[in-house]
Image (cartoon, rainbow, N blue to C red):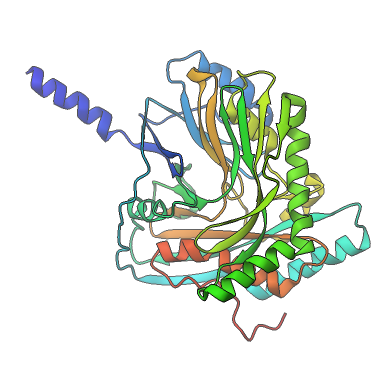
Length: 396
């Protein structure tokens, strides 16, 4: 019957998998479809691969760019995109039993890596001015982690953009499928609307405190920190230098100000400009900027080599970029730095956190900063927010 056919059609639309979801201060966007990927490749072939998509029917794309420019991206063509106002529904965490939580590397080994990087900077400041070093927590639950609930809980923080993007299945997870990168990023890499673009880099961080007076002191000491301001300036200069040739004007209207999430204070600078060519897709701008010194370091190639040498766990899509782009609307879209996130598949989750290392950094303080950055994601998983903090007795 006709009614049955209409029901089947609406089910086909609603039952299609969600390929990517973003929920933030400017609203929500969800890309659904049959899961048709954009042909995969590295950053150098992205423009030619997008041309094949633009010639087809499905113009809305979204997904993840990996940390390494040589690795293959994972972008989806969505048959439909739905947008609506930010949701603020509260989904309580389900009771989950966790079998195992391992720090890889341990906080002590991480601090040793930071000390090693600082020695390299001391020897040749011109060769390396900043490197971002990350560590991970590998978590295993008794059963599959509820991805819908996790995304829903992250989206309750209005100061961040919650994201969930499908990732390629990983043979190391055995028979488990449905792998996704889920997180709460405070950092906008690039937003494009017509010729208008904006970016909001964050670098320089301090942990929020429960006591209002302690929290105010943490904020003020970050604002006054010469080391954090230097770390921040490296990122802002890089983004301005990268975007300037493509823009008629580019400004930082507010200068550097303190921004915050529920768990962290950050130094942030909003960058705004107008493109010479309003048709450049936002995903190409993201690939051009990425990775910034906020997640890699300076100079980029030297920092990336050191990251590969010192980090025992491959970053994959952590510290890459996640976002969406409407090729049918001049390439408008938004791309975010993939931080404060977890790579989740079945009962397994790997949480990532990084810190910018510059001369003046202290290994123990950086280990504690990464521990604090795990906090939001741990709480969403129903674990204590301080699970990733180094033990007080650590010998660094």
